[in-house]
Amino acid sequence: METIDLRSDTVSWPLPEMREAMANAPVGDDVYGEDPTINQLQQEAADMLGKEAGLFVSSGTQGNIVAALTHCGRGDEMILAREAHMFRYEQGASAALGGIQPNILDVQPDGTLRLDAIKRAIRGDDQHFPRTKLICLENTQGTIGGIPITAEYTNEVGAIARENGLKLHIDGARLFNAATALDTPVNELVAAADSVSFCLSKGLCAPVGSVLVGSKAFIHEAHRTRKILGGGMRQAGILAAAGLIALRKMTKRLHEDHANACSLAEGIAEIPHLSVDLSRVKTNMFFFDVADNAPITADELRARLKAEYNLLIGGFYGMPNRVRLVTHYWITPEKVDAALSAIREVMS
Ligand SMILES: *Cc1c(COP(=O)(O)O)cnc(C)c1O
Image 1 (cartoon, rainbow, N blue to C red):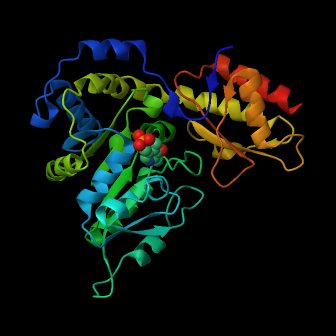
Image 2 (cartoon, rainbow, N blue to C red; image 1 turned 135 degrees about the horizontal axis):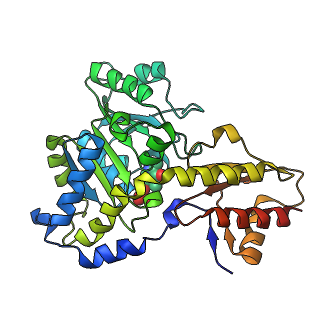
């Protein structure tokens, strides 16, 4: 039986045409700035996002760490969500590697941080305080279910940042999903940001890599930060070749993943003992909960789907009843139907 993997879009494989482009990519030494495919990818990514320059990095995590360490010095503070990937899932890298103190705020159900809470969190000039340097947003907001953040809101945060001499970084691991869901050009979505990172892997299907974009001066410094993290790569154009296809082609089809997530969620909503908030299914990711009085627990459901149907579903840290499902290029409408009948059968 073919495996259907709904745990994450990180499991997506590269397309055959990506493998072919990788095999044929012109390459050079990127630490010397001489890999033409890397240079092309960096410039195209920057142009698409409306920024001056780009930097290829090994992962979304590396992009965020490079950004934080480039914007902030030791003892500085950055404001971000308690639910942010940068706070939860990066081993406290900003503190561990950069001596940067996170000042965390609660994310709202719509994925935003309250503007008044951001303003209150910004430190005054006082010898007791760390210096606030950076605000970070995440788009889409992953841990609350892939919720896209609008350009209007981002612009308001950008205005607060500018009024206070701060920088704004956007962790846009799934930025193109947000742009697709909101039907907003991606450059408008990040117009207020000083730096943005986005993943070429995940829903865009490249095997490796993210791009960090910003001003020429910022990217110049970010180059140094990437190097001290051991992130200087050589003939990495073979990776960028897949990234170019991710950027040019895969960014244009994400509405298909969103439609598949919707059908999946609608099907789940009809299964007894499973509940899903359909109003929150906005991109390629959503959660459903297994009721306490259901015949089986979420863990049992996960184990049986895997053993009997080769269907893999995700979990949610700290919430044992919760299941996460994510769609991507390789999850076709046929696989959505197959997944739904498997879940229906196990729950019956
Ligand atoms: C996946 C993800 C990252 C990290 O990307 P990796 O390539 O897995 O390191 C960062 N931020 C968000 C919001 C993500 O979803």
